[in-house]
Amino acid sequence: MDTIHPTGILVFQCQGEDVLLVLCSHTSVLWFLKNTSNVLVMINWSVFVTTILIRLMTYYYYANELMLQSSNIGNAIWESKWYEEPQKVKQMMIIMIMRSNKALALVIGPFTTMTLSTFQGTTVLHTKYELISHSQKR
Image 1: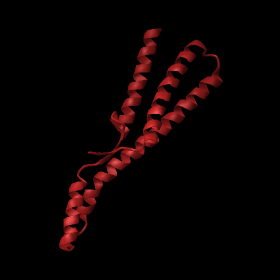
Image 2: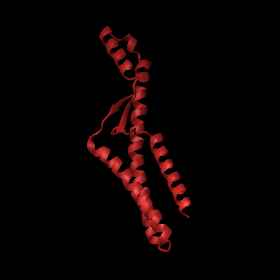
Image 3: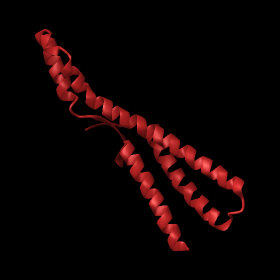
């Protein structure tokens, strides 16, 4: 799988939003355990965390689509009538088919590939960690 190393801004946005999500969720859970009476603040934190999750999911969704669509290029070329073209075009098409065997992927630095399964896995693991850590505190 080939990787596309995006500019630093995308890496910092994704990593920054992940860190922001973790910090805000930890802060909000600790605050909720102490002050459960203020409903407006609870709603505000919930909207904030949901907004960050939606933004992250958007990045991961389009990175996943890029990987899926780039893997379909070889099939699309194969299903065309490339074999009826001149020899030069046939050679170029074969090279394109061979090149498209490796899907493109966006990565977040050296850490992970951006896919929906990665997003889902990190979100689920984070949620499980939250539940376990706070159930042990009680």
